[in-house]
Length: 412
Ligand SMILES: [Zn+2]
Image 1 (cartoon, rainbow, N blue to C red):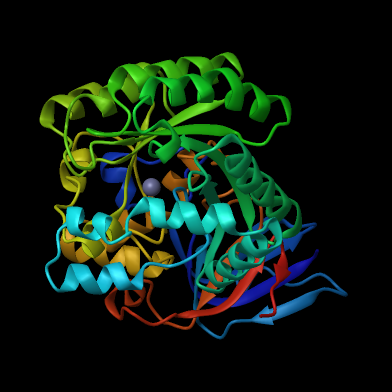
Image 2: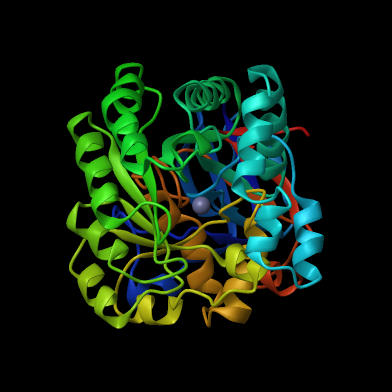
């Protein structure tokens, strides 16, 4: 599609000039053009220039944004979007001070979402996720990673992965699929954890790879969940099938999960609330992106990941929502920017870089999306504000005015 966008008050390009991500002080460089215009051809950014100089070609749709702010579409590199049921009763119990154990005994926790998801039909799961994805687009997120992980049996995990791939084909958002069969141990394997790991390695991974159902594999590497040895087994097996590892690491405790990810060239290690200085040293010497998830800390009242230390060490840092029904029931990347700035000592510029270009790097997509540069996918979002810093500053409302996906102005 061809489109001309003009009178852009601030065009926040996050340009990286071919680099896959930004690190350290570069994260503050957003490369903003004032009074700018954009020419889009066939869904690709063709020209960027000053609105007084760059003029539309004939017979092209023109969008005059009247001084508003334009940012690259957000890249949410960590979500659990396909699930059924909800857990507001658990939320209320937590507010009354009930412990995790008490909530689990009352039928809450991940297994409650597992039961609801197992019972749901493919059609129901598709509809639920489709609505969420459309709402994410509405909030400015144009690229979204989705993990399986609420099925925890071969049949239910494959059902979720098939829904994810149907949505990938149908939905306007760019979707990236991850297999997280190792999210928790299902009740069937309560007393045989290694049996479930074997099921994943010997049955699920080959099945998924053969049908090309996922690009990444993820493991919840945590005490009481998948230990370092089991995680490594899954990563190694996944690699033989061409799947790229990502990890849930150092969320509740620190025992070397982030290091394990770095050792195996994980594309990202995510959470990192308990990341130690020693782990930061290891990550420094790897290509792995450190993805922090502000909503999980906010929602659970847990400590925040040491974002400042990670950035100052020169490690590429990304921000994602971790959207899921248990620990982060929020998919607004705009709110993630606010939490990053108020709770994680990041500047608005660093937060925007982390939510766009570096998020794309966490999915291996930074050559296509994550910044507004000639040759990239035309995923651009217009915000009804005069200054990009207003977006994290005035939180809790949606500032999006228009979403342009692959050069198409979306109508919601
Ligand atoms: Zn997660």
